[in-house]
Image (cartoon, rainbow, N blue to C red; front, side):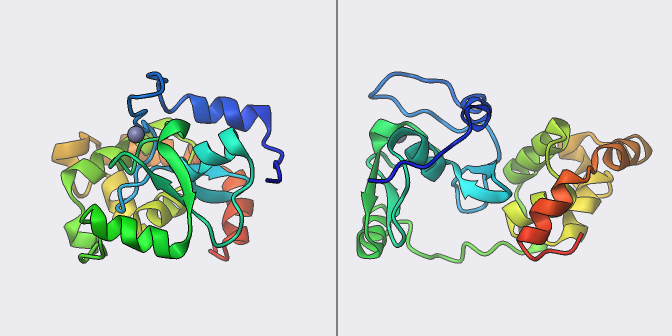
Length: 188
Ligand SMILES: [Zn+2]
């Protein structure tokens, strides 16, 4: 297996989002969790699933076409001892077995659940991601994220107030995001 070069800085940043609980227990991802239940980690300008990132850090490169699967039933778990490589067929079989086969996982703007809004709010506070990036993580439109960010919707969950947050947004909507987003063909 080919090892890939992952910067120490990225490995350190990744380590901030879980607590090592030993080999047998699950290490739950504390960062962004998307609507599919998998964590997301911003790496080299792209959004990578956190369990895939955990596998890459522990074992090296993932060959194209391979899936990183869990031996436990926790999509957000990043314990390398609970991860193994499988084919696309393995992945489908695994999902069926665990009862996670496609069951309308598409989330419409109106169907964001409070739990997801809490995750979104946490990302606002981290000030690492732009609105567009957060919208991309959660597969919703930028407008929806802006409305949450401005306290126009879900303020009962986030406690955000319009003016105060708008200032924070302008200040932290920084340029590095633009390069990352143009790599994803998203205009800023
Ligand atoms: Zn686990």
